[in-house]
Image 1 (spheres, helix red, strand yellow):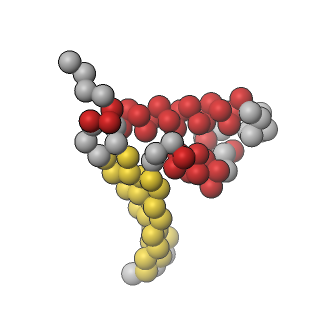
Image 2 (cartoon, helix red, strand yellow):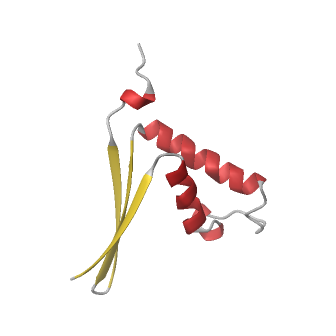
Length: 88
């Protein structure tokens, strides 16, 4: 019997980026990973349908989608995105 997504354990995805002596990471926190994937796909499709992506051609999403707007959309659907800078 499948569990409802609200019963899924929490997950956290962390991405680290380092350039010179600066490091920044972003963390995405949510419940079911499948739900997070579905939310991201749905919001990407919504941005395309609503005309927020005007560049024709084949692009990586981060090349044509404003990250602030996209992450705000994820947050409104229950996912938490946190950023942190560090030096060293």
